[in-house]
Amino acid sequence: MARQYLGSVGKIDNGIVSVNAYGVYCNITFPLVVKVFKPKGTLKESDKYKTKIELASEIITELIESGFNIELVLANSLYGESSQFIRKIAEYNLAYVVSISL
Image 1 (cartoon, rainbow, N blue to C red):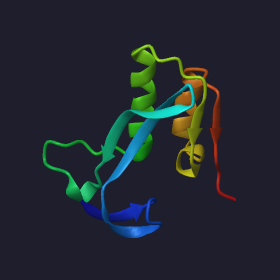
Image 2: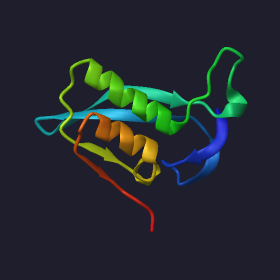
Image 3: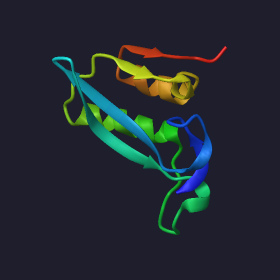
């Protein structure tokens, strides 16, 4: 655990942050992939730092390579404002809806 922004409580506090992918089938939403984000200060010597964007991009690739048919990617402004993430979505020619901050 580390002090970081926790969206679930809307402030900086001690907690764990994850990057998640969900599937929807017949109006049922279920988790597909969860990756824990580890801030730099919490890494073990053997860990490699990955940003949330890198984790999300890995998830997209893993799902595609596993044969999932992704019809639409939904993401918040962190991802919507990331050219790296948008390029990953475009690489697979996926439809997407992302938010951006004004």
